[in-house]
Amino acid sequence: RNPSPPPAEMLGEGVDLHADNIGDTAYSKHWFFTTLMNLIQVRIGCGAEAAGIDIDEELENELCKLWDMSINKDVARFLQEFHAVNILMGVIDKSRAPRVTEICVGILGNMACCDEICKDISNNEKLVDVILALLQDPDAPTLVETIRLIHTCVSNKDVRTNWLTPMKRDSTVYTAVLFMLQSSTNADLLHNLSSLLDLLLDVDEELLVAWAAPDFVQGLHEAIKQTGEEKELTVDSYLHCLQLLSTTENGVQALGG
Image (spheres, rainbow, N blue to C red):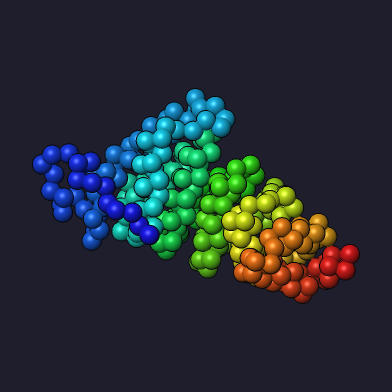
């Protein structure tokens, strides 16, 4: 559910509310611009952050509103006009604050639901590398949003190669996935990961063959055990991954082991 628009008093006196609206929404351009400026200040200050230190509660609340509203396509396009993707990438790349990183990746995940923005994100090689590097992040909420963003982009046939190629090239991606499978207890993370792996193994045979190893099979079994029977959709996705692995020679050997 999208939140209510920022109240009129956020806009200042004498502002025409309708002229200030984004598209057909009741959302304020002025409020978004101000929040983006605050986000830029976060980026500027990121170098001074200590690991694990987050922003003040008021700014966090404003960024969470931005996150919620960014699922609206008119809002996403407006953000894109103000180079929000580059701003968000700069914050993510420098941030040592887990909540800031989670929110920024979440905003990108919402924006990526808009096809043209998904293409812009996926064509940004540096941003793709930054996002894939986040798979090694120890913060579970950040991983949940990171995997959701990757899944959204890989689901787009026009740009999935931009993600699959570096994923196959960089062994740390496999290592990070394996670690999550073997050790995560976070239900949302395991669910998102199951959907992503199901998609990856289904659309890329080269990756399917490369990942058809005993430790990967063991990881899938561990994730199924951790998920439990009540999460049927998640378990079904992991079982389909095992089925896909069984279509390869390496997979048959790994399953037999």
